[in-house]
Structure formats: C-alpha cells, structure tokens
Length: 382
Ligand SMILES: Cc1ncc(COP(=O)(O)O)c(C=O)c1O
Picture 1 (cartoon, rainbow, N blue to C red):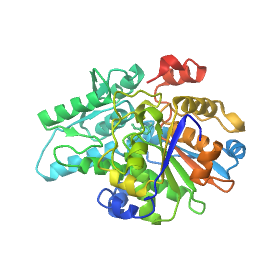
Picture 2 (tube, helix red, strand yellow; picture 1 turned 90 degrees about the vertical axis):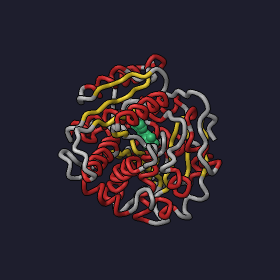
Picture 3 (cartoon, helix red, strand yellow; picture 1 turned 45 degrees about the horizontal axis):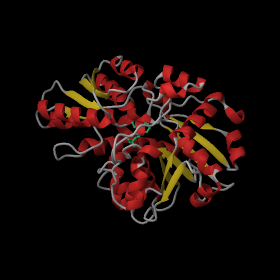
C-alpha cells in the first residue's frame, strides 16, 4: 500500500446496514426529502462527468465524477442538507405554536455556512454563522453575500461549533449542525435525509449500469452515511461498495471503523482538505457507517493537490474539471485506490470496475483555487 495512505475495510458492511439506517433515515424520510428538495426553484440533479482518458490509464471500465459545484448556485452538496433541516425545524416550531421570526445559527469552515445562509434567505430567516479564525476571507465574503451575519471565533472548527451551540442555547435559536443538541437529533437526521437526495440521483442517473465503487469525502460522516443509507434502502445488501475518503490528519471515520466504535482525533489537525477536518465522527450517523460503510481510506494532502491540478488542467485528454481542495478528496482517493496495487486488490478494483467519485464542491474560493493550481500551495491551505 502507498505509504501516504491508510485503508480499513469494514467486515460488518453487508450485514445489517438497512436496519442501522432506519432510525436515522428510513425510506419515508428519504422520499419526503426528495419530494421537497426537488420542488425548490432551480433544482436539477448535478451532472456526471466521464473521465474516460483517466479511466483507461487506470485500467478501470469507467471513472465518473458527480460534480456538486452547480448545486443550487451554492457550490456544494451542502445546499441539500442544512437548508432542508432548517425548513423542517421551522415547520415543527410553527406547528408547536411559535410565530417567529427565527434565527438559524451554525459553525462552518465554509460550505455549511454558505448553504445555510442561502437556505435561510430563501425562507426569510436570519442566519448567524460562526467561523474558525483560519478560514479564508473569500469564504466569509460568500456567506455575507447571501445575507448572513458572520462571527469569527479564535481557534478551530470545534471552537466555532462551541460558540454556535452556546448562542443557540442562550437565545433559543435554531442550531443547524450534524450533532445532537438539547437532547434532540432531529435537525441532524433531517440533514442526512436532505443529503440522501444525492444518493437517489446516483441511482436514477446510473440506472442500468450502477457504479461498482463510490468514493465519498467524509468529515463528520453525514454525507457518506446518507449515500450508504439511500443505496442500502434501495438495493439491500447488493450494490456499489461505498468508500469514505478522509485526510490522513483527520481520519476519524477510518479509525472508528477499525476500532468498531467512535475514535476522536487528538489535538488540532490541519489539512488542505479543510472541510474534512473534524474531531470525531457524528454519533447520529455512526450506526450507519459501522454497519454499512464498506471501507475508509485516508489520503495525504499531496495526493489531493496533485489530483486537483490534474482535474483542473484536463489531464489524460479529459475535459478540465474545477473541483475545490476539499471537494477533490473523493476523486483523489479513487485515483489512488485504482493505481496502487495493494489498495486496488483490497477494494476489489479491476478492469471491469465502474468507479464513481462525488466531487462535493466546485471552486468555493477562486483566489485559493487559482493559487493551488498555479503551484503556490503552501500559502493557500484553508
Ligand atoms: C466539500 C465537502 N465535502 C465533504 C464534506 C464532509 O461532509 P460530512 O461532514 O457530512 O462528512 C464537507 C463538510 O463540510 C465539505 O465541505
């Protein structure tokens, strides 16, 4: 195996994933999310891009990217989850007699806040977004441009999340996060249901020739769990292998799969794939991952950067694709897994394999992206 990667296979993956998914997102919750989100103005399934030159070089039948850059003009898959969860929570509060106005609060290293700002504006709700100190000015500007207030917090993402939790607790604001809050986890579960729309799109778009392997970036694990749940609800134990991809410096999903229980990352991690840097896997989706995720692969920043540049310049004769430095993780993991003989063997990748990578974001900060593509990576992390 490549020195700069770690892989753990999950022996439990095909035993009971549907049962594990049910308390988090069942068929009814997935169908409700699909129905609601597909009625939002501007909805369209995100495009699939076939990288046939790259696939030939890697000796696989196909390599496809599902590109979330065009999602609702927000730039990432996050437009599916937090906005859906916020709308559902406002419905619940109204049903319980609250008149509003409502304020949504969240912590973000970029995409979550941008998506929530967009979703809040869409339904006339105020948004207050807490950001760690190191996140780029361009990402803050993109959130402000969508009408949200931004509060900078000294420290990392966890510090920002703590600040958002404190604010929500103080003023009864709506915390839109992937973690349980005040003894409830319905917002976190609705976020997963919203993301499951992406899994439904893969099933529709690939009908007739489903991928054999789907690579998905993981931070706290909600997105990859949503895809696992949606696929297993539709296909049972059959169907594509789902592989989570994380930075080596923040591989809580991989460590947790290896240990059979959530394992936190010690200390303050940093990675080029900043949106994936978290402390620990979400307890809300952990049962889905424990019983449904096929494997977790941790990769180095160098691998992500090289893949970002190859995609951007249209290497191997394929059309150029602009994918941000967090969003590139899944494609970087897929390329590495197909190229590295021991990863390839462990994951059962061969000439017949149809590999799909979810590019979770497009370019979310043009200045950072251009700097990365030009080659001055050191100054551009986060
Ligand atoms: C582009 C991108 N991909 C993947 C993720 C990871 O999603 P999750 O935290 O649900 O695992 C994030 C999280 O912010 C992200 O911004």
